[in-house]
Length: 375
Image 1 (cartoon, rainbow, N blue to C red):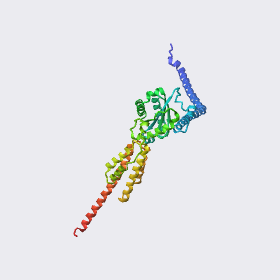
Image 2: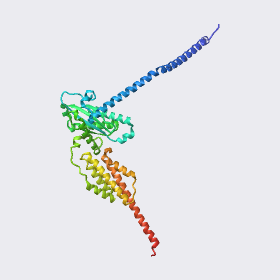
Image 3: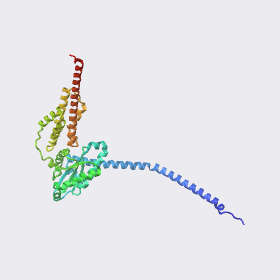
Image 4: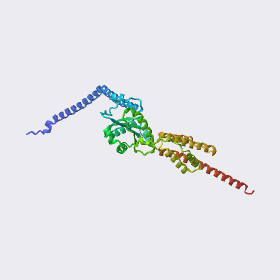
């Protein structure tokens, strides 16, 4: 009887099968790699064409958006006709109504412009403004037809609101608008971490009036420096006081006297009273007051430099006159603190000079006593 193990009988066959499988796998991998590389090379022109088409589509979308926003800006500035914009579809967000229509303009002033310029480039700031308009439009669209307008890099956005006359009665009062405005400010604060103020125009019945309405609302928006972020303003209430402003020269004279006498707290108190007194007047009163204060304090600096032999750095006057432009300020407190800091700096410099002069006098007395005490 002859016994042959099974493994010896099929061993050669198994080795042949394994070799065949290895060769097949290697050929498949090499073939797949070669096919992939060839497909990349052959499809490169197609991919380049697709990328070019995507870039062109993106540029076309951006140009369409920019062109549309430019037209809407011209509408608010009074350079474009509402009828022409309605005809070419620019005002597609405002629906035509059979009956009468009432319009509102809501101006959104973004606070903290300096911080935004430091944290974001031009594209980032544009994206933030776009997001703010989206959030605000979503909230106001519950009650109005809306048309958002980006007014550019000055920190202002606008919403043109429209509603039929019969629905307007539901939102005509300040009590009904106030919650919507507060919700807008709160939502944007939570979603985008941005502070803003909403300024609401007086109602108007025709888009032909929108440029004059925008001018008045923009003037009212300047008074945001007197209010905290998030607080809604109504242009009619802000601008209702049209009294003639008289600059409080007597208060300024007392402030100057307090600075020269070294009474810093009294001088700062008078300065704040002068600035806060402009709240109920047109914004030109704020500008006039800041200019007066800048000139008064610069006069003190000149007098002190001439009579007391103190040299102030040139940056002091540069900072001083920068506070004379309230259009760049975020709040009235910012202007007050700027003037107060300069007042304290002047008083501290005068006090140091006075102390040094007394020390020199005492040193001379001691020297004379030491040299001539026998006489």
